[in-house]
Length: 171
Image 1 (cartoon, rainbow, N blue to C red):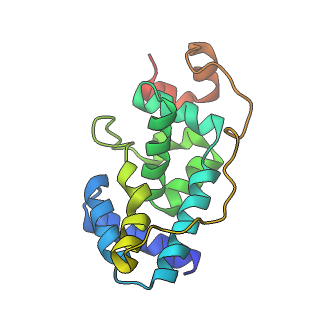
Image 2 (image 1 turned 90 degrees about the vertical axis):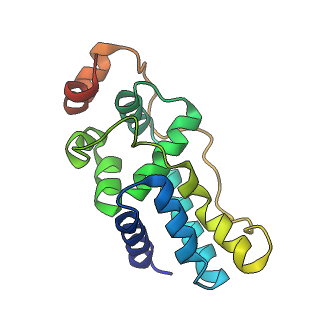
Image 3 (image 1 turned 180 degrees about the vertical axis):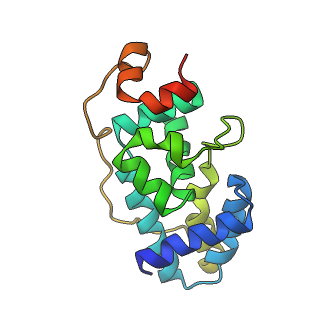
């Protein structure tokens, strides 16, 4: 599976689910279960690589603003949601987290920002296909988020680093 195929699956399943992250995960499992086990493993590697790429302090801070707080688990689910939004939103957010204010204009912290089940879609599809758990993907897990840490609760720092997000979601 190529990266373009990966993003096409993400876009098609998001559209089929009308943007609902839980429904998108269900549709994605159905679509992946129609592929070969090797294709599902490829999809899982591509997903995990993006999940790890988004493990950044500045993106965590953006999630903290948008969700009115973000624990480590919450940030994991946010990164799954971010991948589920498609390539343009994902790449824009990784490049410049403050751009999320414009990339997701209809963001609702009650409905959006949490797509935990998307992170397990490949696992479920692989198990449906083979009866076995998804094998180890061979990707090293980062020790911590990329980038220098800073206090997410410091309003002055957050407003300066994320002016667009602060305008929408700040105190």
